[in-house]
Image 1: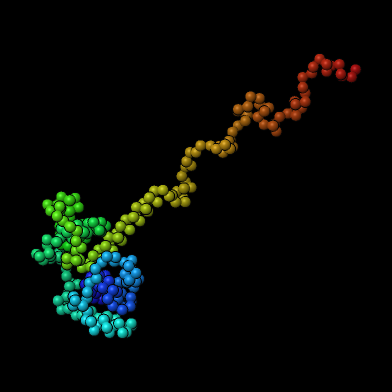
Image 2: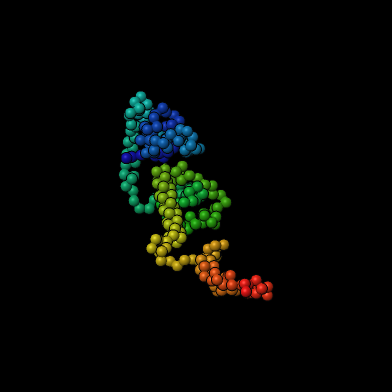
Length: 252
């Protein structure tokens, strides 16, 4: 499916200037219908300037009127012979001489607003080199004092679809890395059932009762008869030593 230039900015313009349905705008720009709804509610693309598809030779006014009259109709992108074969471009990006001076500003914008992008992705988007990106990150570029971040899409160094795709891939890569880190931590902290059963018990301080099950009263008692009440001799308890007065009480 062929998409217009700067799809999200085009969707902003269509929401603000036409009565097309969210579904029609979403199908034309390649966005999700809920994302177009968010643009209308002011929750998505806040502060983004709309991109006029009529002035940029992507739509005819009659095409918009036709789809406004029929909510089931789909917008047809205006054929542009100069754009044919653009999707088949391979190899390093060529930046015109008139726009090469905008590359440091574009790199600064990407580094500030999309820190999740890797150097290789930035190199592919704006056609620069890794040392240049590093110098702008470290603010060691010879013109750092005069560099003002500028959206690379606004100066024509890349397309909005290319930027959105790069950001999506970077976010997906970051999510996978976080999941791998969490999985590694879980593997270190959790053991399988077999491992937990075969592992030696960790030493613990005995509580008030636990740890006294094997406590031997015999070994710690002063009198062996006090060690176990059940093992005491009942006759020995009643055969008390006889006193002097006890002999007189016995019958003759």
